[in-house]
Amino acid sequence: MTAHAVPAESIGTQSMPGRICRLVAAVILAQTLFFKFTGAPEAVHIFTTLGVEPWGRIALGVVELLTAVGLLLKATRAFAGATTVGLMVGAVGSHLGPLGIEVQGDSGALFFMALVTLACGAVTTWVYRRELPIVGKRFAD
Image 1 (cartoon, one colour):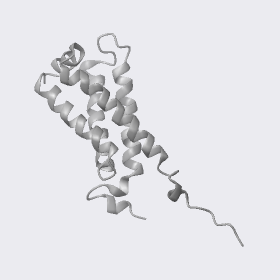
Image 2 (cartoon, one colour):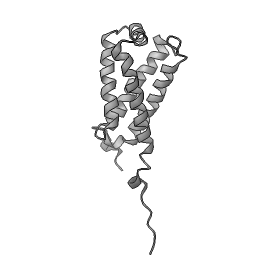
Image 3 (cartoon, helix red, strand yellow):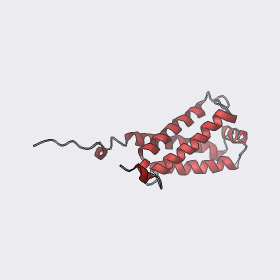
Image 4 (tube, helix red, strand yellow):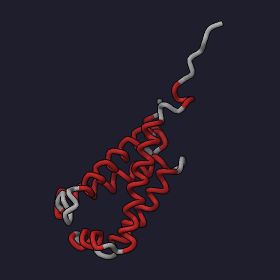
């Protein structure tokens, strides 16, 4: 009798980076919602600097809330990963442009969180790329 190797996919090791990145991105996105929805001075400053206060702050908060939830759901995780990438490209671009790396003496913490979330969104999108609407079929084996 010979031992049969269990494929990695069946025990979930292949998706561990995807799972970790989905959770990290969702937590960071959700954590920032409090500041956006309560009109915290830091959030108001950021969106005033960008010229989209208050409607941009609220709209972005809603999109980030939907994205954070989508990252946790199997049916939407790939699309939410791609949405995370888009959101964080905007955030990083804003920090490299009008906001600056450091915002109100935060030592670059918001910029760093945006980079981490961007990386997690990219990993999530790549790991679950076959599940993407429209283009996912192009990644089939």
